[in-house]
Length: 182
View (tube, rainbow, N blue to C red):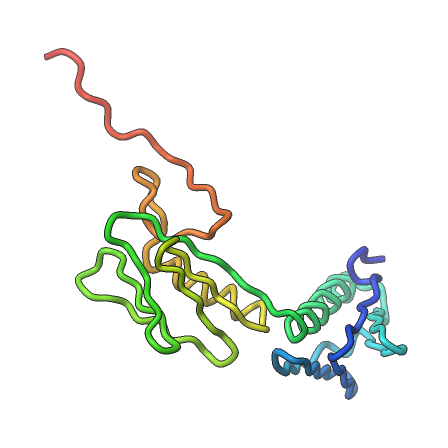
């Protein structure tokens, strides 16, 4: 039995879950999400709890069991409280600023890079601390946007300049050693 898949999903107040066969729609204060899952797992709603069970013990179905439960949990958490990722900018002259809904990133290119948020995503920029916070109700989209912004200038190992996740540790390398003797 899957350790993740067998856990029940509690539905917090203010969140509405609708089941239509294998399709799950979750609505909450942050937004609405809909996803259709495999018909090899069964999703039941009992009062304020969702339970995911599998219909067979085939290897693929066992894998889908925990994945389905995790995806539904992320949908419920996302529409109720939301997700966020924080990026930190390191380097002399590197900065970010918020212009309308977009974020303009200056990271050593000859031009500023403008990042537009997709639907359901918002940015918060702290120019003093050089951080960008990506907020949204879809965990996958929040992570994808954070990854795309980081990809503009990943941290380099010699000086540590670039864009990194706030909890990321960059392994530093020593530079070239001076030539000894002549």
